[in-house]
Length: 481
Image (tube, rainbow, N blue to C red; front, top):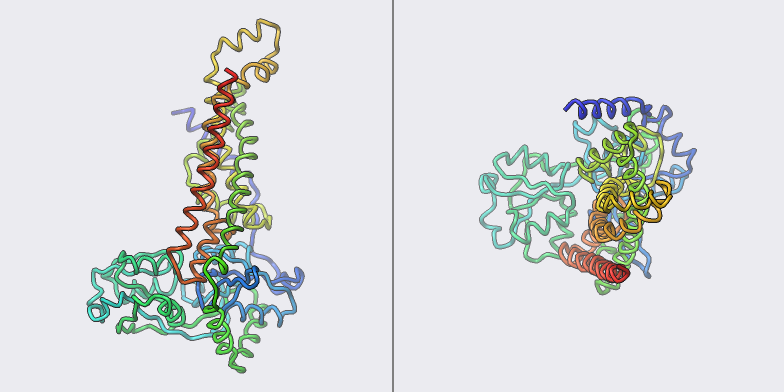
């Protein structure tokens, strides 16, 4: 117990020595954007007709009402536009830590959000609607009808707050993306879902089994605005000027017409979205290889540190391994993504942050695999090698490690397979791997099931192929015994 307390105290001391970096820029964010020559707009591209992806001539592009507004803003500021796509509930954190400059994602300026960020004037007014299965349209008409029922909403949205306020007796199911909510309603897991009018219209056009409930909310109206960092008045003024021009010229209607046209372009499913899965598979393989290869190097160092007689090295390795193994990978991804900016002051891409998180996670598990493999070699092997005149390092390289690798290989292969599947977690920060791209297709195609099925098949092919390759390697190594 005393040893464990000492280890934890050492860990706290190490953390306290890390210099904190303030992510909030001292300058107005407008100056930062102009100096960079690029504005990074954060959004969640699964929210047609506001923002979604479309494939034209084999190339994907972002389209929608908010995308057109973002183009307008970038043009007025005289800078390039960069779209940063991620899950909706990660947007505010990304804005506060400087990962993005503004948010244009159908976001409403609630009092809670105003405490964290500033908002422009509203550029669009919409109404919240309840959607139910068509067969239940006559049964679910009032607030009382939904008492005790399950209602699906998108996490950290106005719809979630509206349901909590006006239907407090309902069971709320808060999900990350709109296609997941639609799938929950189609499968009967929830009795109703709340969506904005334009979004609901889009999904009802593709889901004939769904319909609007006649339920009317007391606080159904919602305005959408652009979120900006605190203390950026010059940027706020510039954005408000752009929004004023959009209103004066009635451009939102043009933006919506263009989005509706893009939503229903003809073409087969694979011709329109197959490219997303190909790119996603490539990114999944790449980030998994990075995680396992670099994780093995780092993990090997940690294993030798833990096996060493030096108490300091042993303690550092023990603390690191126990901390990583004792926390979820999702938490580690967010710590790296937000922490590299908020603590270290580094502006790293989402892919690099996801790769670093996987490397750090793999290292802890692979370290234990290496340690177990080395300990599995009979101690007499080391004694025999030393008696023949080999040094400790020579004995490890020539005698112990060749035998340990045979013990390690099956577990290392399993770790690689696990990393391929767990790499889907980095989709929450906008890494365009297989699962993230499948979610994009869900939003663009209004089909919540088929993209998940194709993603599952792709994951199975990857893991099955790798397991067969590992079996061949193991058999060949066993022959040498």
